[in-house]
Amino acid sequence: MRTHRGRWGAAALAFAVLVILGSSLSFGAVGASSRPLPKPDGQSAPLISFRLGLPKGQTLFPNQRNYAQHAASPGPLMLFLPATGARPWDYRTFLRTAVASGYDVLGLDYWNRGKSVVHTCGGDPECYTAVQRNRFDGSAPSAVSSVDPANSILNRLTMALAHLASVDPAGQWGRYIDHGEVDWSRIVLAGHSQGGGESAYIAHLHLVHGVLMFSSPVETNEGVPAAWMREPGVTPASRMYGFVNQHDMYFSKIVGSWSELKMQRAELPAEVPVPSGSHQLVSTLDVGTAAESHGRTVSDSTPRTPAGLPLYLPTWKWMLDQTK
Image (tube, rainbow, N blue to C red; front, side):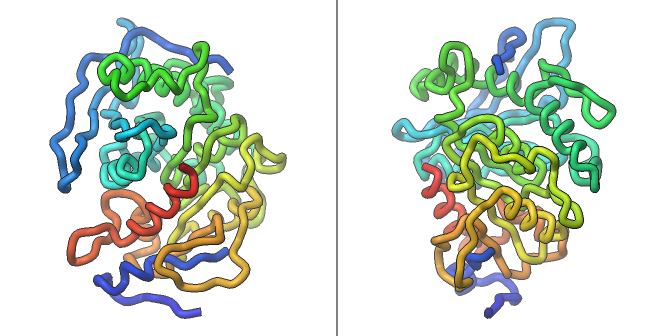
């Protein structure tokens, strides 16, 4: 198997990847701080930037700006969840790529502060379930995670969709709510690191349109998986795709998680311009340290060609095509 470990260049672009391996709860109106971002990188459609708001006396934390945009024609919604400590702002290039690929997109801020889930839970399989369940819907707060329902991913998503339906009626954002409930069947979950693990957990509970995991999930420790992975989830593995760099500091844990999720591996690893035939995608490029390799699969710090294109752009587009 041949690997690419040189610095990035135009020729590397063609070989960036190896194929291997209940009820919604709403609290008050959404804040009126929406504003379109400038049109960066020559994109034709600006991302809508907005913060969410809660009724007086209630606190939303963290409260970074969310980013959204509807596609030219109705498509599935891609809900993107950032990594530990990251903000939706840090993934604008990927979000715009998804819009160009036919997705409505929503980069959602959520409780991803403090230590990462893997550093919080280590080898405790029940801990992962407790953390991810609490951050998803605000239920069962514990010593490892105490997000309230108002700050949960579920409530933030519901609020964001209501706000977007109001300020961007052309986007038909109400399509993603059915009788007051999130219509998960119309949603592709995507996320980086902790956000990818949370996406996989939500897909375990709900039948979603697809799942895209970047440098994630980091939820096995010395062969012991997160407790929720012990049972089959609602969303089949055929709808899940993962991408990681081989030099990622969590590589073995991520690949171990994919194995637990029963994601398909390619029978014959081969270097190809755009990957196909597998749900597990691994880059062998040297893109920095082990920590940098973990962070650069999808964020705006991703390596670029001399022309300024993301080195992993063909991989992103291929993955987006699979879940559309």
